View 1: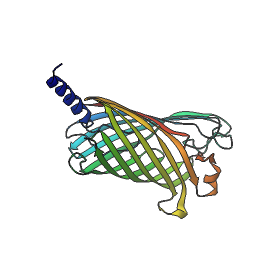
View 2 (view 1 turned 135 degrees about the horizontal axis):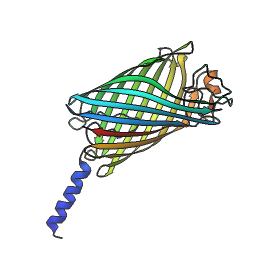
View 3 (view 1 turned 180 degrees about the horizontal axis):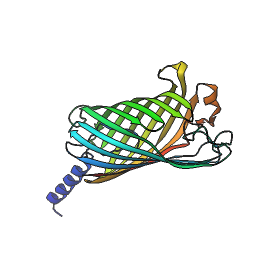
View 4 (view 1 turned 135 degrees about the vertical axis):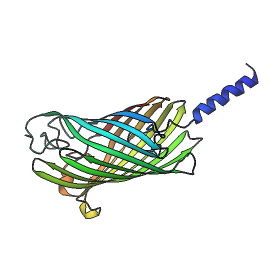
Length: 295
């Protein structure tokens, strides 16, 4: 092989590795980047999230999210979601009863719980104000209202992104606040969630990326953010892998709860070996698969 052919081959490999990810495709399972769908393009995504294992017994919470995204402009995207879930639990709580996360308060704690249900519908809007491919870093703002038979919520998020090594290495960070109102079995709960997420993803060969994600989730009673109203903080970390072609992609992310702290007696009672359970979190929180197709 001539030196010219070798040079052409090396240039082709370098070009493939340095090509940015397909616009709009998620490199992470939980962390958002500033990438949005190009103007006029539509994408369908299916999410499957498994939240697995609590303090005792068995607990499986499968969240299904079907999403349609559309690019209004090259920097503004809208989307709609349909959210459903299947919960199977038996003696999962710290006390060995069947109660807690996504289980209705009126359920008999002495009996197993198994149910598929419709949760909510939600809308999403992402406005990118700076692109990491044109500016020193990327910046976007996100809003998601959500409504269902038993709950209403709105989520506000700031997304930052920085690319390195000809866009092969992507660093992203999110900060978001979500206000929730839930009514079920005659009980009303108002809560605020504050979360900080971060991730790094490296494209190690054409179309393939490997990364790491971190989440810090904080929950507060009511609609105020302060130490006096904070219920708990929890930390999660885990790897992800991503494949993306011109028309379709998949992302698999696994997050494990590494530490939690409760700020009142009820929350502390649901902490076992440094992890919080109850109606808050799981040990594997969670295992998420995203599959998407661009049209």
